[in-house]
Length: 596
Image (cartoon, rainbow, N blue to C red; front, side, top):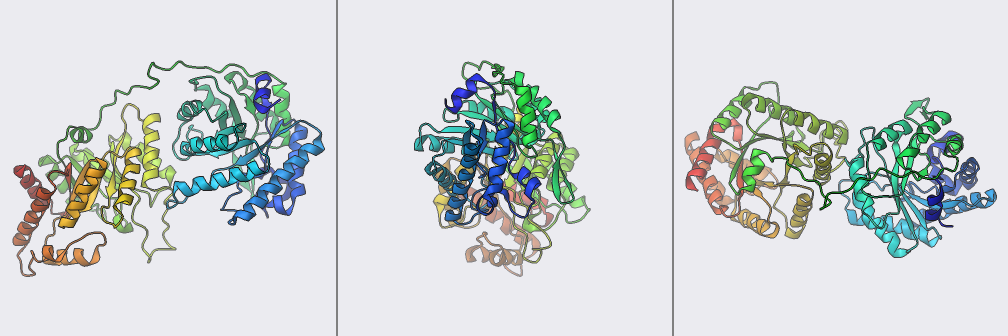
């Protein structure tokens, strides 16, 4: 009888945690996965303890076997071979009929690693396990949905009888680290034919997981696994301890039976004692029906959410005008406030505030956006950089700003910390701009269905490989990016590149204009600002002896020439305010409007 047949008869009992139990029994000098090669007898003993406690399905000690622990592929293969041998020896010595599944944990990516290489590593692990005769795969503690379809399809393509189990890790609010909510996970995984079993492990204790599941309905009948932690961890004298005793844990799990669970087991902090207590409360019970909800005729929910005024204007094809105001370095708000009032009076569509560009600390962009909106009720778009906050902080920022009526954002990866501050100031970069846009998509679905946030991305149009630029733009658009703000445009070459990108992507592009207010300003931009192309032709339009008025006239004329060249491609213009000269920016905006 195979695993899927056994599940029909009764709630199947899986094992508990390997890593935390190994540390508890044998110390922390080795990672549990390293012990496969150094002390295999210890790993075998843990497997046997779980089997004796009643586990009918055990997972190989391979959760963290990947390039981060074993940089060489041959080392990974040896660790996999040793882990599977330990599990098989434990089953043989027990004399019981126990299924063995391969445990595969998430492969952590840096912000620069691409998905293709990560997929290839997962495939290498799957192939190595298949070669050892493994046919059940547990992808556990998953954080994002994008890997599930390709990995489950790959398992089935390599071996039709493979059984694929996918388990996600949630926080107490019901979201993964990357913003995927329990409802979205259930809905998506129920629709994947290559996923046989799915559920939730790690992240929360049994009581919290039960409360989260009680709020859920399922689009169709499915096989559900639950493997919560033994409460929440606490560090004491260098070791992690978990709060739930086995009886309490088992009682909380028993209360999940009416919710329709099919597989029960444990994650971090659970021990053979927890599994033995769980066996007593399960008592060979058959799974109960889940609460299944019927879908709409089209299978999709309908949102009546109204877009922001800014997005509405873009969608109507009207040109928008966005103006960036510099956030102050100190607590003096006079210039910023005056700029807000002047732009509001001139009917600017959006003020945007940068998030400490060049990694130089300024007043917080999100808080300034709230401040500006309260001053005049003008639309404000703060930049959100990935450099300074982890995902917890970024999520909190979006929630707090949204509560204050801000729904437009510019999502950027952010400038790195300069060499003078490295070692003293740390760049976070949990994710890059594309990954955070994906995160915002999930927040819109789960948290803001009635008042979604809208976001744009930065477009650095320069670079030799235009197809790479297009590829990145398309990834952002797939992640919900509604428009792009470009770097300042000066040369004919820049204009033609932006036009070409517009034709290749169909994206909404708001073209950057930066008024150069003097010969000295133009010379600085030409020589000291990477990515900005001020050529000699532009520089020669200025004279070192020009008056302020003459230089501003030149800046206006230059911006008008660029705007005219971009007339067919630009969905709007993004003006960067030089030295708080809001009057100059308003003059340029009015001149562009008059020329339309």
